Image (cartoon, rainbow, N blue to C red; front, side, top):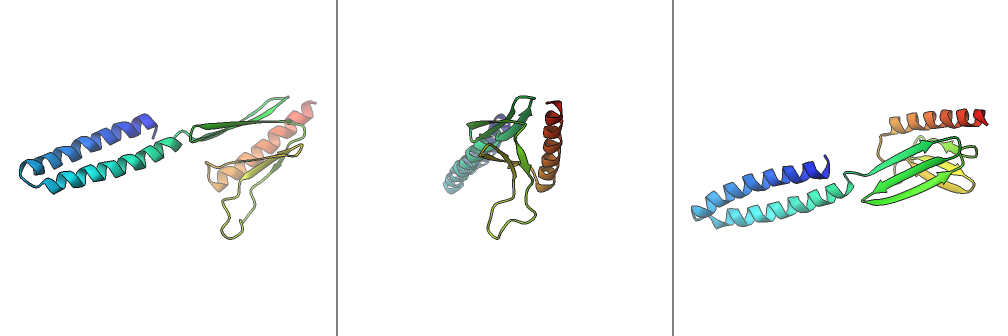
Length: 143
């Protein structure tokens, strides 16, 4: 869901919950309104945390002169430019050590190491590693 969709869903939830709580409040059961306000505050906080990461992404662009990796996480954007002729693609390892994070694709060029594939599953990561390796070979063949 995009942040706008999250906001709309939250507005609908607030409207319904507060309408029910107000009906109980008018009948003298004020505790329902208090609980409803607490519930909506907790859900609102959770949705804000979700919305911060709803637009997280990674983008890889390849040209004959540059391999550009862009990563956006919680509105923090980072970019790296690698030489496509000197870039090695290290696929995700089979099994990470106990307690380690998921294995990512490692791109390495002239001492710079970048990990990509945070937002896709392992099968997709392997596919991206194969396709990227093939595309880098094609760029090398052009030179």
